[in-house]
Image 1 (cartoon, helix red, strand yellow):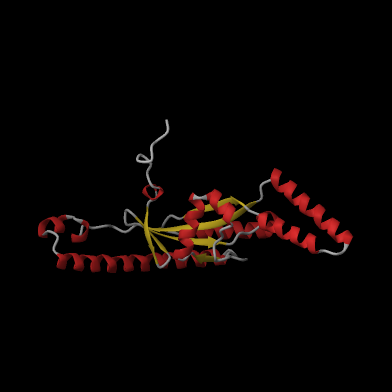
Image 2 (cartoon, one colour; image 1 turned 180 degrees about the vertical axis):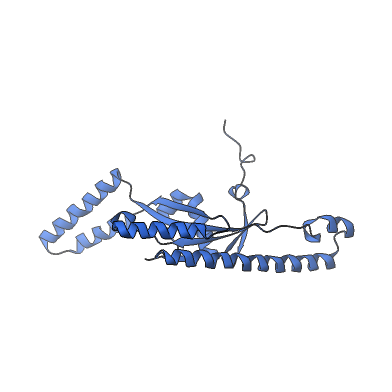
Length: 225
């Protein structure tokens, strides 16, 4: 049964993210997350010795952690309409009849191939968590808030305390991020932390795959081997 517009809920209500600060995701429950974009490696093209070395390094990396991490792969269809359109312009401007024919045949081949086989782009990410213990404060309406009421003076002090605590938690998360980045580097991988704008773009990509494919969004940072 279809829901009316009044019954429809905004997408933000289903996302556990409250905001971002200095490249850190702040969740609604007070937890923090930092996301690293990580370069990939073609494991199958490595020699047996290289594969064993990578596997051993990966085991040591995981065993060195005293906190959990999340590894996920974002796959999405690549939009090559602009590429095909550019080939068409080159074909029109080509004066050599033989090259003009070859470009036209190549462009038709690409269009036919893509219509039957989706070209996927894979991006690798590591999510680093930090779950801080949240104590009631005047700004959160906890015990102190009920005891002293909503004093503007207390509210400002509580907000300042919350902000200071957040900065301390972000600092501790940054230490974890440095540890993860160092471990990935030892495996021959390069990792960069996403900034605020890139985090917003990433989640837009995740929740709007069709719009992303049409508009050809991409993260501003690129991770190269």
